[in-house]
Length: 250
Image (cartoon, rainbow, N blue to C red; front, top):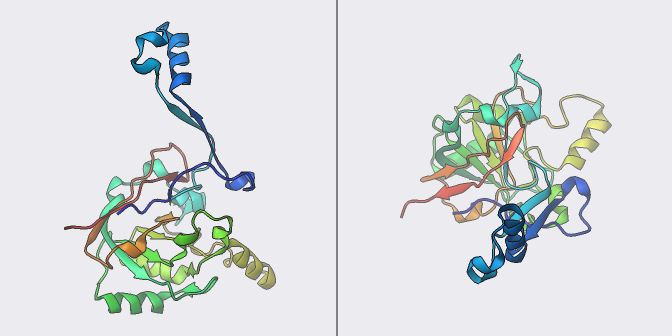
C-alpha cells in the first residue's frame, strides 16, 4: 500500500513557502539537448524523440511525505550534536508497522498517553523494539488542499516520550504535522507566554524520526504489516522526502 502523497505542481495561489514547482521538458526538448550536447540529430533517434526530463525549481524537504531527523528539531539532542537525515541508521526505516486510529479526535485536540494505551489495548498489540507507529487522523483526505496545514490533532510530548521509551524510533502521522496545527500551537504559546508549548513534541530532546503527511493509513490493518520508509540521502539535511510503503502479506 502506497502511503506517500503525490508530488505535483502547486496551484498558482499557494504561497512560495509551501510551493512545489516542477519544470517538465518533453521528448522534443530532449532531442534538442542531445543534438546540442553530443551532435546526434533528431533523425537518428526513435520517432525523432530524446529523453523526457523534469527539474524541481522549488521543492522543500518537507513539501510532501517526508521523514524528519533530529537535526530538524534542535541543534543538540540529549546534550549531543543532533543527527542529520543521512546519519540515521537504515534499520530504523524498515520494520513492523502499527496503526493507531485517532480519527475521532477534532482539530487541535491532543493525542496523549491514555489515548495510545487504549488504542493499543483495543487492537491487542504490545509495542516491540523498532515498531513503526503510524497515527491515523483521517486528515489525508485534505492532503492536496491549501487548508491541510491547519487540520488535525497533535501528539503530546508525553505520548512521544512514551513511545520512544518502548523502543519506537520512527513514528508518523497522516496530518501536516506531528504537534498539530501550527497556528493553534502559536496561539497557546503566546497566550501563556511559556516555552515548551510551541512544537513541544518535536523538541522533546530525544533522537527519533517523524514521518509527516502520510496517506492511506485507513487501508492498512492495525498490525501484521511491514513499513518501508527510507528517506533520500541528503547530506546535512534535517529531513528528506520518502516513498513510504506498507507491505501487507497476502
